[in-house]
Image (tube, rainbow, N blue to C red):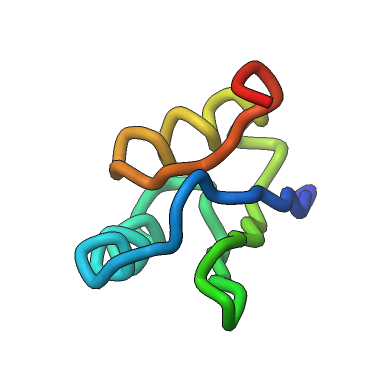
Length: 74
């Protein structure tokens, strides 16, 4: 396993539904951990780079409706 950590700013603070979606992300193959900043405006994601690429991680986060700010959106 090659663990990689990514940090994301969010386009808006997280709401209750977002927190439920984060809990569900842990069941996605290759996603190790998602941590929310106490301010609810940042995410830290640990994933297995031997199984996923950065674009895959971002697709998972966006697929779960999380308002991450990607490099293309910055």
